[in-house]
Amino acid sequence: MSDRRSASSVPGQFTLVLHSHLPWLAHHGRWPVGEEWLYQSWAASYLPVARVLRNLAAEGRSHLLSLGITPVLAAQLDDPHCLAGMHHWLGNWQLRADEAAMAGNIALGKHEHQLATAALADFEQRWRHGGSPVWREFIDAGTIELLGGPLAHPFQPLLDPRLRAFQLDEGLTDAHRRWGHTPTGIWAPECGYTPGMETGYAAAGVTHFMVDGPALRGDTTLGRPVRESDVVAFGRDLQVSYRVWSPKSGYPGHGAYRDFHHYDHATGLKPSRVTGKTVSGPDKAPYDPRLAAAAVAGDVDDFVRTVRERLIGEYERIGRPALVVAAFDTELFGHWWHEGPQWLEQVLRALPEAGVDVGTLADAMARGFVGEPVPLADSSWGSGKDWRVWAGDQVRDLVELNDDVVRLTLDTVDKMRAAPDTNSVRDQVADQLLREAILTVSSDWAFMVSKDSAEGYARDRAHQHAHAVREIAAAVGAGHVAKARQLAAGWDAADGLFPGLDARRLATGGGPAEAPPRADEGSAPEGSALEGHA
Image (cartoon, rainbow, N blue to C red):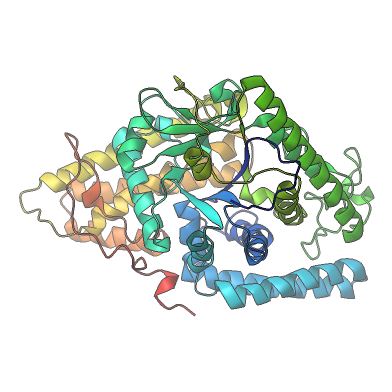
């Protein structure tokens, strides 16, 4: 942890947790939803956030934050197709900036051209071999704590326990292959929890995970062992987190910040500042980076003051140094909130200078910021802090679809194993069945439907992956081995993520999975960008 503290140190620790995630988008549409979503987030959030970490590390700072990177996002940041698409997108960003300038919007064109040029240079210098080398630099140096998670971000409480355990184990294995580190902490997808999951976490080697504040009844000042386990749940401090971003307010709503929603339709650029909450798009004032920079400084001061007051107040309440955890989606910083990376870099400098000790969740455990066990109940960080976003009436059909697909997948894989001519050789058909089932049950589809965000795309994606499962399973059930292999190979061309996924590691219906030979855990995944893509 940083030792850059002033004489006015306050008791306790502040921890920033970022959750980086997008669903699998490669080969599944481009605009308005699809790969464009990946490239926008990559350019606006992942590149700048990495740059912030690099700048702070160069100043000798470490243990800055706990960074969750979901396996499905990591796969895209290493994927050769996505890397080529991203390089093209950055070049096109420059062209769009030039078009804006030629159309008369000189200030917008100049600002965007500078951003695009810097991003392109950064990408070509550091990212062309994939995202894994970028993040591993920070992990190895102790700049961040890496948080892992299940393969493709399922809402775990609703998932069959066999597939739940498989996704988590494979997700942690995937992390080790990419970064040489197996995370012991995870950001549970959607902060979803149901009793018993702590047992699965312990079996997988997970020692701590995130929940939302209300899951701990708002008492988030210490991590809490869950039930009879040693696995610790850390809760998001909403009083502090909501200063930055909440369903109704937060810093990005400041009138000087760039407006996310209003586009210049000719170039796809965002020319305006928020101006006011009741001001319509065409009436918004032009974006001015200097005004935005002044707003960032004010919001940094406000946040530091809020954290200090919270730590002091909680110390006085509980009679011991307290923990404050602020947690957000990484994509807030840059993609949703254009000035977010500026705020992030400044606040991570300002907190230690104001006497606030900054550390990771792992640091919090090591330093004893852990209280009494808690009988954690069903919860999430979604609307109502329950499961309605992923299990409510709006998505009842998707819940039923997921149940059917998972049942069919597990039954089919079990029957394939039971066949008399089955041997220990890896089976690409079983692997692809699991791959498609995992993509079907991604939590993103139900979230997008419940929030009325690209609902058609979300339903199409869920049903497309379900269709893949059904037609492969039908060929297997009919004994058409060659057809099943042909179908699996075809779907693999579009959905070939996680080449290390091995169906032999799925637990059988009556017990744990066998342990087939694994590839060298220090090597890159087969077919990944780490194998020499330039």
